[in-house]
Each structure stands twice: as structure tokens, then as C-alpha cells.
Image 1 (cartoon, rainbow, N blue to C red):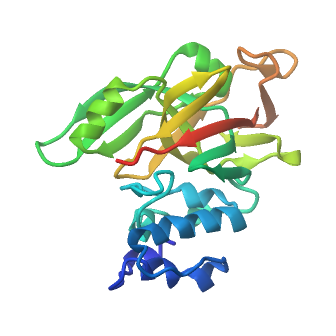
Image 2 (tube, rainbow, N blue to C red):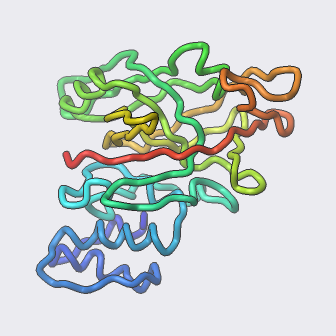
Length: 256
């Protein structure tokens, strides 16, 4: 998709139709649907080939399908070197433009600072939140978010800012994900929309850059080899590598 990010077509829908055979998916051709075609293609790819890199997009979400990107150019920052065997979120479903991901526990973040030169884009610094959470999920670096002024204000006011790591290594059995201290991971930024009967629904912030975070230290381990605030949470698998249990994360994306 990063290759297609440099392409353009006369008709909006042709940018999607020209990629159907490349990805080997089935998509009904309906001329006149315009920009609705590309997010439909992305949904078809998610269904046929569930791999984490389909989420590695930046920029404008589709106004008609707000959980998906609006154009292949949203994948321009993707780097093929980030992909490997048995890597990343691969268990997910799409229903009513809401995503259910089997993801690592989210990394709680908080607003730290912002800077800009008066132009269109600001650099927003987010920092990991609280020592308790660090003991539960590990220690991570600050993250720089590039966004416009309105998005900056929304980030400052949002509740439950969290990072969702996309390209962790999968553990045996597919129930745990492994992370390595000192490695950089691709992620996206979420905030809490609502919580009902213990099930949280998150919103995805659209940003102008592909977010990356370094894992700088493992969670605290108990003498039994597990640790964190929930008891059997983190497990040390080898030097510098630890695993965390996967959990369901439900995500919607704003249409603006």
C-alpha cells in the first residue's frame, strides 16, 4: 500500500479498483461512489488478510467509513522493514465501523508539552503515565505526535490517552505478545470514548506522523516470574524479552 500512496487517478474510485487484483480481494465495482471505494477496499483487505500493517496509516480518516483511511497516501510513511514473521496484531474483526483487536495491554500516556512555529503542524510530546502502570506493562519512551491545532487541543482535553502497539511479536498459542527492551515499536494513539459494563470503547486520534515508541525496561517481576498489578500479567521469556497477555480492545475512529 505504501507503493500505491504515490499514485493518483482521474476518478476517485479508480485508486481502489486498480488495487483489487494486487491484493487479491473481492470488491464490487460501483462507479459513482467516489471516495467511498478506498475504505471499502481497506475493509476487504482486513477481512481477507488480517495483518497489523493495515492499521499503520496517518492523516485523514474517511468521512464515510471513519474507522479507515481516506486514501493510499495515508500509508506513505509505512516502512516494509517493520514487517516480519509472526509479528503484529492479526486477530481482529470489523463490525459497524468498529474494530475489535486482540492487542497488548494499552500503554497509558499523558500530555507533557507542545511546540510549534506558528505554522499548521505542532509537535506534541506525550509521556507514559504513573509508576503503577509501568510495573504492569513495562517502561516506555516519550512519543512525539505531529498534528494540527485542533487536534492538539483535543489531545490536551482527552481522557484515557493510551498507545496501542501494533507490531509486537506473537507468543506461542497466540494468547500472549512479546516485547524486547531497547526496541522501537509502531503504535497508534487512542482516547477513551465510553465505558459500559466494564467494556471500554476507544477512539483513534488521526495524526500526521506514524507514531513510534521505545520499550526501555520490562515490567517488575515477582518471585514466581510474573508481576504487575493484576497478578499473572507479565512473564520474562529470555534476557531482555518479556510477554504480556493479549486482551480485546474496541476502537472507533473519528470522522474528522
